[in-house]
Image (cartoon, rainbow, N blue to C red):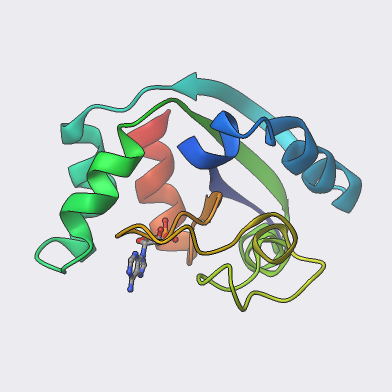
Length: 136
Ligand code: CMP
């Protein structure tokens, strides 16, 4: 059935000028852009979004990174778009993400505390509804 997911083009993707290239892959795959906006998130918004990671060693660096510049938030729709976008994105670590994926093709390890991995995609229907409410 048609579902929606939250996609973020994170600050590294926007800063590196990869917004268009990433959107092109999403559109070429055939998913529908329902809404899209440039967001400079507050700490409060990020604390909600990343609540499950609070207390982990990368939590503070992650929030700092996500506040380092604007992200592009996308409400994306399509059949099985949640797993479909995660497949397009590739695995979390960009060093080993498969070539052909967004992270695998455009990402690398920059030697900083947080994994700058270009994009975020919701991991379940429950997360998608929760996260869409935070960003839109
Ligand atoms: P994301 O899918 O947005 O969810 C949590 C983010 O934390 C993840 O992408 C990475 O950017 C970052 N992250 C996850 N695991 C680690 C880790 N072990 N070290 C540093 N950053 C991480």
